[in-house]
Image (cartoon, rainbow over all chains, first blue to last red; front, top):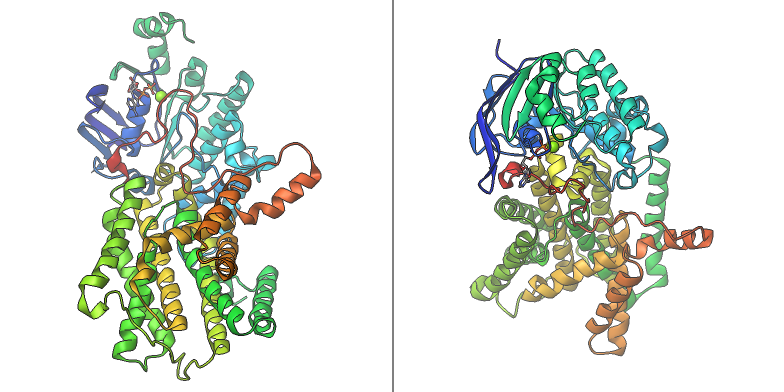
Length: 252
Length: 355
Ligand SMILES: Nc1ncnc2c1ncn2[C@@H]1O[C@H](COP(=O)(O)OP(=O)(O)O)[C@@H](O)[C@H]1O
Ligand SMILES: [Mg+2]
């Protein structure tokens, strides 16, 4: 069986400065992969190459057995890739509810039409409402996204990604910017989601070892734009290289 | 409800109210105003359509065009050329033709111009309008400075328009219909996609929206309705000249949008009416009203950055007097400036990613 996602010697340089260097990576359907590594390791850039925001300077990206290297991000999104950003990106002039409508709509084939009013798509609006309640955002439904607190922004963005019903979900530091308690709750919710949506392939990046232990089945350690380790959470966590990278810097 | 009713949900309560309000205005206007003031109202109605169509691009989709007069002019010249060759053509057919020509020109232009971004795009629209303006002088059958005259006696369907009153009914009906179409677009799922593209094109792409397609469609719709406005004006005033393609017109229509504000659907309607009436009233007193219009804009931009439509909300907030009024972010076409703690630029993506 072909892998769902495949990077073949993918590299990305920003103005000649390498951020990701010749990474080979295969992710199977249904896998739960965590990518860890210190800041600047290239995790977000790797996500950008998979989702299509960044075109690799060398190498290729494959999705479901197809070379998608030249496909732009909107095409890849329509092919079933949804993502969140390290710093949540929402539609600032839309309310929480509208952001979710938009996501539910764009998650559908033929979701956007000139002749369809939103009120004629109860299927979409109901889905969005349900997602809003499930994410605990019902109280904030009419609040503009631009005035949400950091934690709520992350929660909303994740709910948007999920309501799109992707086959591949990319979560870039899902608990970044949250307080300790919020992060705990978010991790728990994420765990429940992962259980519920077994068919969904999920790649996430994180710093927090606890998050990784509770969510991931496989862990990839990146440093300086390269894959250093690839294995079970236990294997990677216990490895001397990991300890050196993390403990050496005093990070969690 | 019928399928049509579900697809075009206009038979809502507020929809009926708006329809009744519109009908009352259309019928009563001639009762209170006659002669020259009625003609000013007719002109204002045309500018309402022009401002609304500009707002589709500028306010809804976040694309700034400095050359919206290009499509206004294309509409007017299309109408004039049809009139010259086949004067018996029904007026509504001329409007339709104007819309089609402008939409095609706009779509082709946008496919190329949108490869650039932001400021460059705005400049290209300006270049388009200037090139068309030059063409009217260089191409003999466009008649240069003289332009076209005597375009009156347009048949609506079969009867000619013979009075200011007829012209008012004809104009307000066409404008009303077009604004209704825009309202449907505004509340459609495509309208939502346009807002998303305005808010954050990169994020929209990541959600799966074909940003380029949304922008091209918005451009074509905007151009088509601007052309209808141009053709309507030509039919009403009987004159088409290069002035309709001038930068002054492109600027004025942006001013109308800014005066009214684009955070609400009705903003540009208000803006166009205020602009046309203040121009008319002032030019009765002074020779040149442009100074005044400039001042008006300045005052509004400073006192009411969200335009006149935001006035009621402002007043209500002031009444409540509970702290400073909350101002929603301005959808002025600029991208949202989010601060990014980790220092990476917001539009962290490659140029080609949107293509
Ligand atoms: N948009 C960008 N422009 C220039 N350099 C960037 C950009 N994004 C990331 N980088 C650089 O690329 C490297 C990898 O960054 P990133 O992928 O964000 O790492 P991580 O997500 O692991 O912290 C860093 O050195 C960073 O400074
Ligand atoms: Mg990162």
